[in-house]
Amino acid sequence: MSLSKNNLKLITSLQRKKYREKHNLFVAEGIKVVNELLNSSIEAFHVFSTNEDFSVSKEVDFTVVSDNELKKISTLKNPNKVLGLFKIPERKKLKVSGFIVALDEVNDPGNLGTIIRLCDWFGVTQLVCSKNTVDCYNQKVVQSTMGSLTRVNISYVDLPEFLKTTDLPVYTADMNGTNVYTSSLPQKAVLVMGNEANGISKEISGIVKHKLTIPRFGDIQQTESLNVATATAILLSEFKRGLK
Image (tube, rainbow, N blue to C red; front, side, top):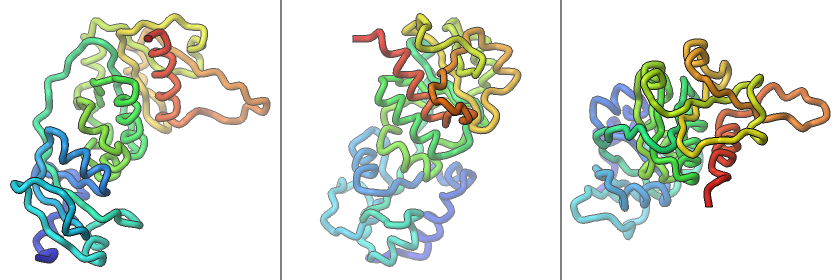
């Protein structure tokens, strides 16, 4: 069996959020990412591979495609042998406890994917996103997570309302905040990270009581700010420093 026109049309359409929602499907590419998803609780819908021996369950539709056919459905410059369609799972209930990362209008798919991986690495199981943060099932996000998408519960909420009602202390990154390296940080909190260009919104800034800064050590001091994913990594490392 080769790639059908209907499958080509479907896969191409899933690059847009409205069609992912319409079909309740998302795309994953590459051996590692697809295998992570196949071994998770997320349900596979169809797998396409240039390798006829690629391992999938008997219940999953499987199609062997040529290298040229895989290039037609892939968004990667160098497709890695397999592309899978997976059903978007039902949203799990948000657990407002422990340590939570929250994102305020993070727009770059690569940044969101990296932050999901960071949450996975640092044991943060709850990621809260504002409704205008990029869709976590965007193909570039899925690719950037390298499988961590299966281990982090992601919720899209009215972020100001969430922050107003939580009993957890709320922290954020701010150029005029307290030095994170000299701060005493709790193990249970919400860490809010903002938009790549503008940081957190004025509304969110008015809600957050605890503001942290990552000091610059360079002599020239011309760098205006850190990438949001890089800043998230540094702050998570500091919050988790007290754990053993």
